[in-house]
Image (cartoon, rainbow, N blue to C red; front, top):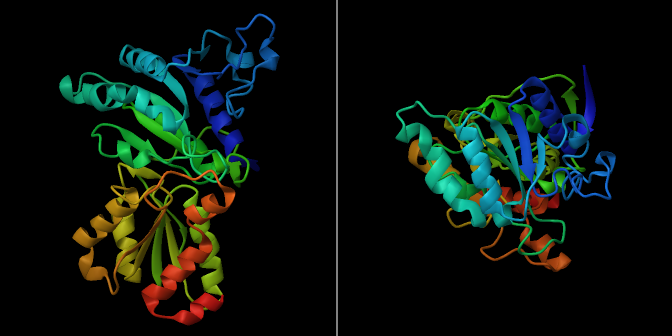
Length: 345
């Protein structure tokens, strides 16, 4: 049985189900119990993280499995990595992905390499959840989307869901996985994205893209929240008789190259939408993939729609200009097809 819930509830539900299934699953991070260890607060007053994603977990699973940590990303991510290497299956919540630079050694030089260094005899089943994304007026240090940095690290899986259904199934798959996974959650989608989500336990394979809308005239590959931008543009373009296919990679590493290339083979045109900065981004990587392995499929140059190569601005007016929009997508489609009438949608 399914019901319509938002992404925050879907992620919370995934953690509850994983912890009920396996007592080795623990959760640690800043304020995940939200002060439950403070003398003047009771468990039912626990905040559940800065935005309440883990609310209710400390009441069910107790303080031995829901662990508040000091404000030391390097400390608790390193501890979680070590716990994973020695038999636990931890979930570490890194409050904002902007702070991930404090614990890069764990990702670059430790956990993702263990399986290779020990001839396949070691495993590090760690899931790191972290928030990303601009649009909430949180300025330059709380709004970045840094997922592309981690796709360059072999042995590390990188997941970016766009819907509550995907978020729940992918998070459960990440927790089950025996290699480290970074799970990027767009905070603007927590309460804005609703979906039919089954009540029970289910997983979605990591490394498998999803076609969110079928079409034959143009492929748009969009990442995270920008899937919704692409779908909004596609709906407007459909009124002009243009059928756009929207591909959601969901998993950036491993990347489902087959689905992307098959879509471009069908449509012969590609736009990639990524709200991260353009240099060394997923938009650039996907464009390079298609140019390398699908060049003969193309009838037009590949277009990328990204943020500019600047920090995220605090000014609401500038932040709105900074992000991809359906209007920017329609303009890009118009340029790609040489059809100015599309701008009148």
